[in-house]
Image (tube, rainbow, N blue to C red):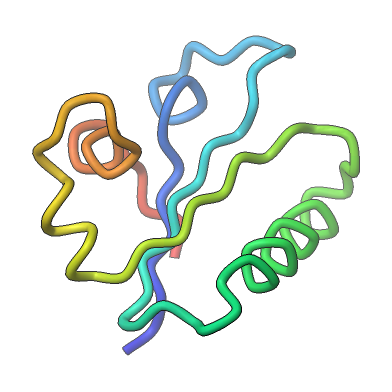
Length: 89
């Protein structure tokens, strides 16, 4: 299965300002062993795709089981995606 990526927080709600970060949660079937490197690589690819190396991107990775476990826990990125997320891919 392919990964799913969701935009959430102010950009998903449509109330972002120029100072807001872009929040993205990527849900993968299984977490990669080197998840920190994967997160860094994905963030770099997003910057390149946007053509903007300066906009702050906050990227989270979660496997499907962890997302399911936390999607109803208020205050977590998982909850924000479940309640206001916009699927990107």
